[in-house]
Length: 307
Image (cartoon, rainbow, N blue to C red; front, side):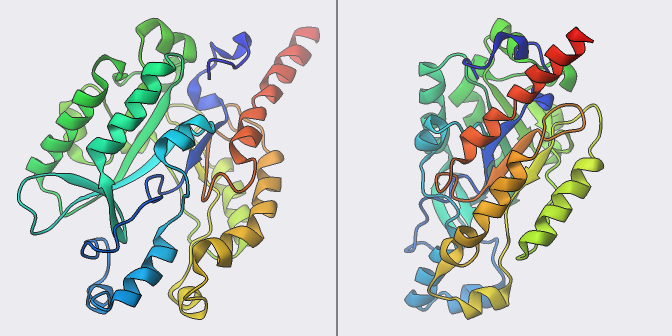
C-alpha cells in the first residue's frame, strides 16, 4: 500500500482494489486433533478413522502460504474462522476449517511482526465465524487482539473517511471486523455488516462469475467495504467423486484462469470491486493482478481532469 501512487492515498479504502485470501489460516491443520465443532455429527463420527482426517485435510486446506508469506505476496484481507477446543482447559482460541489450525494468538503475532517492519501497510482481519465460544471466550479473544496490535487498531469511523492518508496520520494499520454482538463494547471492533462478503456456494465457474457480477451491481454505494469471494465451493458429491485429489486439484487449478480473467476485467471505485478473495493465492499472479486494477482509478482521474 505504501507503494501505491500518491493520488490514491486520499481515496477511501472501500474504493481501492485489495487482494485477500479465503480461509486465510488453513495452510496448516492438525490431523491429530479432534474434528472441529464446525462439522456435522456424522463427519465427527467418520473422522475416528485416520484416513478420513487425511482426506478432510485435502479439502480443508485452501491456502499453501503462511500469514507472513501471504503478506509478503501482497495479501491484505484475511478471512478468519475461529473456535475454542472443546474439552481443553482454559480459553485458548484456534483457527478452524474442518480441522483445527494454529492458535489465533500465534497468527496475530506473525501479522503484527510484519506490520512493525512495514509501517505503511494496512490489513483487514475479518472474524466472521465463531464456534464453541461463549462470551468469556470472546472476551479472551478480543483482549488477545488488543494486546497484539494496541495502537495500530483503527477505531470505527465513517467508511468513506478511512483512507491511507488517514491511517498513516493516526499510525493505524489494522481494521478488525467482528461478527458477534460484543463488537458494540469496543471502539476498535467494526461490525460485521460493514464487511459484507456474499458467497456463491457453487462448483460452477460460470455461475460464480454471474453471482460476482450481480452482487457487485447490488453493492451499497456508501457505508461499507465489499468482498467479492472469487472461490468455488465443493459439494458433498464433489468430494465423494474426487476424494483423494482434494480441493486444489479438483476445483481450483482448472478454474483459476477463468476467475483471473474476470478479475482482470474489473474496475475499483464506488460501484466497483473492493476486496477480492481467492483460494491458493500463489498459484497465479493473483495479488499483483488485483493491485494493478488501481491504475484504472488514475486513468479515470486523468480523463476527468482533461475534460
